[in-house]
Image (cartoon, rainbow, N blue to C red; front, top):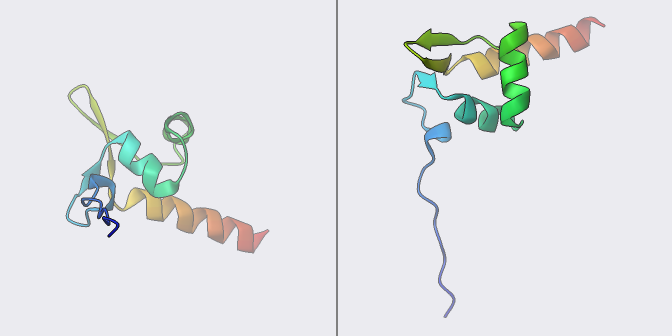
Length: 75
């Protein structure tokens, strides 16, 4: 009988988090880490610094997507 592997919940999918790492935000956007840092650098994706750590508010990836969709509809 084959064994079924059920993956443990990933932090990137945890709805209780209020801040994400860059890697978690990139995963939510389905982009690479470098692309995510580029979005942060241009101001397209909101982020904050906590000491030396860069964090992205959990609602920022969805807000970025909403802006992009609105821009596309307006064009």
